[in-house]
Structures are given as C-alpha cells and as structure tokens.
Image 1 (cartoon, one colour):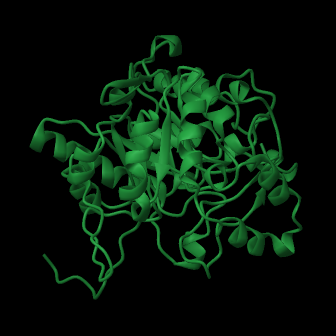
Image 2: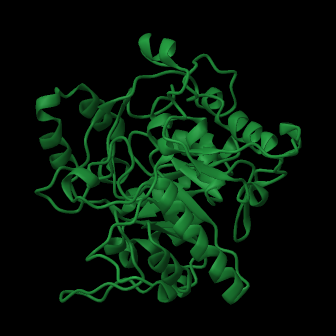
Length: 381
C-alpha cells in the first residue's frame, strides 16, 4: 500500500449528495413494518421528536406518544426553569432578532427547579403514554434519580458530543455502566458521529445511540466549533459499529440519526444508510401544537459566553398528525413523513427497517436538481 499523504482527507456525504436505488422487487407500502424497539418498549413509527424547547412540551410529548412515536422533554430547558414556561416561550418568539441571542443566554441561565422535573414527568404520565426525558452528562448523576422517582420511562443523556471516556480535573466523568445500575429504565446516549465512539458507547451497556453533531437547522455547532460529520456518512459509520457490536455481543443497540432532516426523503436516506430511527426538530417545530410559536432554536450550550443556539423562523404549517401521516398540503416533502418512509421501503422491496438497511445508495449530488429547472425557477419543488 502506498504511503498516504499527510492527513489525507476522507470524503463524506450528506442527504443532498446521495440517492436510494429502487429494488428489483416492490412491496405494498401498507405491508411494511417500521416499528422501533428500544429494550422493552415498542413504537409504531421510528420517529422521535427532539428534546428542544420549541418542539416538545408536556402537551406535544403526550401527543407524539399517542401518535406512535416518542417525544423527548428537555429537563434542562424552560420547562424546568420556569413555573410558567409558556410565558417565556412567547417572549423568545416575540424578541427582535438583534437581541434574541442575549435573551436566550439569560433565559437558560436561570436555575433548574428540581420540583418541576417531577411535575412535568407526572403530567406526561397522567395520559398513560411513554415518557422520555433528556439531561446533559454534567447533570445526569444529580437529575437521573429524580426522573426515575417521578416515573419517567426512558432517559436520554445528550450533549453536542458524548463519549464513553471523558477527561476532567474537576469531577469524575459520567460512567454509563454505573448509570445503568442507578436507574432501571432504558438509557439513550448521544451524540456521536464516529465508528469508534459509537462502539465504545455501546459497550457500556446503553440502550440506543443518537448520531449527529451539528446538522440541525437551529444548531450553531458547526459554525462556532467547526466540528461535525455529514449525516449519511455518520450514520453509515455508526451502523457499522452497531453491526460489529451485535456480532461481538449478541445484543442489538439501535442507532437514531438525529438532526438535519427537512423532508421525508432525508428520513428515507437515513434509514437506508443504516439508521433504526430518526430524531426530528425543525419540521416538528412547524406543527400547530409546537410550543415555539413558529420559531425554533437550538439546545442551550453549557458555555455561558457562547451562542445558545440560534433562533430561526420555521412558520406554522399543519397539525402534528398531518405532518406525520398526511394528507399533505405542501409539495416539499415536509408532511406525511410516515407515508414517505413506507413508500420508500416499498419501492426498494424492503418489508422492514432491517431490510431497508440493505438498499443500495449511490453518490448523486444532482438528485434534487436534475430536470427540476422549472421548479427551481419558481422558488422550489
């Protein structure tokens, strides 16, 4: 093998650069099985709603579960910092663009009220639906016992980048095997984008892994920190880690591609790339029930002097049920996401998610523009 060039770069791919090749056999979309299993829980659709304040509150977390998916409530956001989060959410939506970053820094500097954690979880559980909540690694040891005591079903430990090994002079890093002993519920961990990091996280005994660093519409990580991997490549690398870990241990750990989704086509490509499920933010922020009032902003970064995400206007397009199941009222693919996924499985001859992982993917940077000059001239599809 020839000596490689110094720090030779590897090509990576995002959703716009690839396409799925139809199969030699087709299947009726209604016959496809798209269930997601996370330990003892089964979800009818492989779609999670992001733990972001503009996307999920008690109402939307409940509705998402009732529709067959899973909404994740952010336990370090406005829902647990303020007795009346609706007032704060409205203030963020009303703020002029010039002062919204300063306002977000102020809003997320208020202390977390531990009593509100139990109140929010119990409010979701009151509807007899699955309750999933999210915390950051730095606060997990303190907040995880509170979530278990309040009756949460699934714990998501999530930060911009999470690894199984963390070096710190000030405190002992979060040890996931110890966390699994501390709480009996399934634990989803994220985010990561590489084979090695994903494999090491799985070896700690966690239940599922979130894949994606910085692709979200309201995320500033790639601009501020310069880190991230395009989602198709990140998903494929982590799917390889999942499959290798399954051969190593006999335990299947689902991977959930998190962020960067604009339409059903992106979801289908993520599944074909190896994802077992997807986590969506901005598309769900457009729902009539979303708490962000037509706006969306990123998860707060723990550093007080860095931007705490950016607020973007996404508008309000349809009820959450219509976004998931249609009928669609738009042509950009942002509604009837479940129908799109089932149809993609059908044209690829895949009866389930596992078979869709075998679909051929090709590099196709012109997939969204080829033959579309008239649509592009009129402002979009």
